[in-house]
Length: 282
Image (cartoon, rainbow, N blue to C red; front, side, top):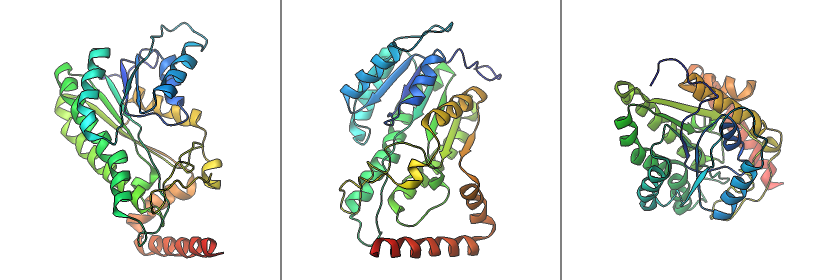
C-alpha cells in the first residue's frame, strides 16, 4: 500500500458488513469507482439498491457492477461462509466498512438480557467476526483498510441507551486495539463516530422486551443528512484517517468533558435522565 492517500477516484474493491436504510455510502463509493460487495439480510433491498446504482449518471470514472452477499451479521456462524463468498466474488477486499447498527431505548432495570445480547451480537460480535474472517487475506495482500462506523455513544453513554452504548464502547475498544496491532502489516483502521443522522435508526430501535420502538426521535430527524456523512466517510478513507468524530458542538464538548471533568459530566447525565424520566411519566 502506498504511503500517499488513495485517490478518491480510484477506490479499490470494497465490502460492506451491512447497509443502513439510507445507502448513501454505497452511492458515493460507487461513483468514486469502487467495486462493491453489498451485504445484508434483505435480498430485495440489495437488489433495489443495485438497480438504483445502475441508473445513476455515469461520469468519467469507470464504475463496476456491484455484487451482493445475503447473510445475517448477528449470526456469527454464518459470517465465515459469507466472508468466503465475498472473497470468491471480489478476489480480495481492500476496504471493509462495518456499518451494522441497531439502536435501543429502555431502562436497565427492565431490559431483558436477551435484548442486550441481541444488540451486542449485531453491533459488536458480527462486525468483529467478519473483520477477523477477512483480515488474513488483507495481510497476505499487504493492503487493507478497515472502517468501523461506531457512534458518539461509543465514547460517552447517555441514559436509557445502555445496550447500544455498551456495544459501541466495545466496538471502539476492539478497533483501537486492531489499529495498533495492524501497524506492522500496513493495514489502516478508521473509527467513524457520528452523532445523530437522518436514518431509520430510532424507528427500528428495540425496547426493553425486544419490541420495536417505532418512533422517529426529534434529534434523529434533525440530524446530519446521510449524504453528508457518506462524503465524510469517503474522505476519511482517502486520507487514511484513524478516527473521525461527526457531531455538533454540545456532544463534542461532552466527549472531552467526560475525562477532564467527570463530576460535571455525571451531573449533566443525571439531570438528563431525570428530565427524560419525567417526560415518560407524563
